[in-house]
Each structure stands twice: as structure tokens, then as C-alpha cells.
Image (tube, rainbow, N blue to C red; front, side, top):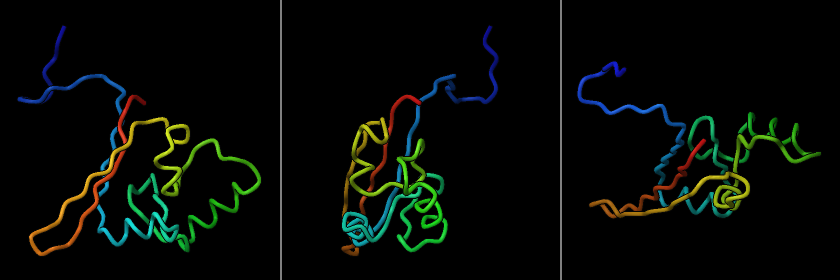
Length: 108
């Protein structure tokens, strides 16, 4: 039996996972150079000097964490770490600013 909850919307009970982040080209380069890390909970890039990140890093320095709350550029695009497909796209705005879009997708 099907029950319509919202009109004009297709819903499934799937366990798919998606993430989309858009950042300036400059911030993307800072991430590649190790100045920023990807915060999975806030779905954005943050400085490596962020207090929450430093506390998490200290708690996990002796052994590899079970769950990665923060990812370096290399960790994000390493399938073994994230276990999802990843992507990177870029475009240039009319004013000439480069924007990078990246993320992951797959089954959770």
C-alpha cells in the first residue's frame, strides 16, 4: 500500500548518501596544500587551526579513527578512507572567480 506524503515528490526508502561542497578556487588550493581540512559534520572546509579539529586530532593521534570527522584532501579522494565515489568540478563566474564543486555519493 502506498501513502502519498507530499504531492509531486518521489520518495524512496533508500540509504544513498550525497554531499556537495562549493568553495573558491583559492580555498580549494589551500585544502590541497594542507592549510584546510574538510569538516564532514559541517560539510565545509575549515582551517587546520580550528579548536574542534585540533582536539579531535589529539584524541585520535595514537590510532586510526573509526570514523573520519575531518579529512585532508588526499583522505577525501581515497576510496578506502571514505568508501564513496567522489567528484570534482569547476567553473568560472561572470566576474572571473573560479569556483570548485566537490563531493561524494554512494550507498550508506
